[in-house]
Length: 273
Image (cartoon, rainbow, N blue to C red):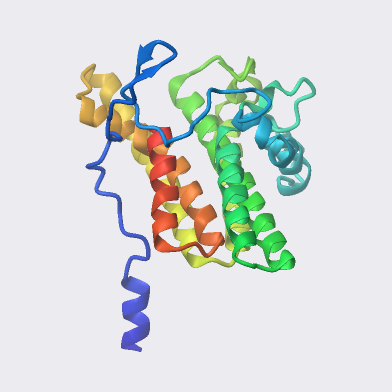
């Protein structure tokens, strides 16, 4: 019994001390006539919309994510709640679905790791199963992010979101809050179905961080003062944590080495911050 208790109480994922905010800067010489201090991998080519554009590369994997969420993952027998929860997923003009940056990051990283696994001789059925789980993770990530938008817009009293009236303008504050809660609940169910306790802890942590970030933002808006470290910490909680832990979860689903898992986390964190 003592072993079980120790295992339950022990943290699975080491908390980020949030003391590494910036990537190292090194001189890369001249790039297009300008000196760049941003550290990039060797051989990185200029952006080409048909070669290395992340949205182009991930289009096949993420193009129908909003439709899948709206049609398959979100559903309730209450008509108003149903409409509110699907508000950003089932729009005819496509504006409501947003840029889907987080699913793009998850699926690009998943495809890269899939390529690594194929070279290691992983069987095709296993590769497909892992990719299917990572695709579901991308959908969960978008559901969590969208739920945060419902709540944020109520707190900020925003008028518009993604080119249309904010959810609380369309359905009222109470229904918008409930729709956000409902999305988080549905995301939690599908998260549990991934059957990976490390991933569950990672993604659950992001929900806690979203709340922390919003509290920090409220505090800053009242005082009118935000020091740089506090600003970065708030950005981590509100934006980078979901990106970092989603990328880390994609690596965990891939059964990647600790080094790859850590690299995936840092990639998401620095993109987010």
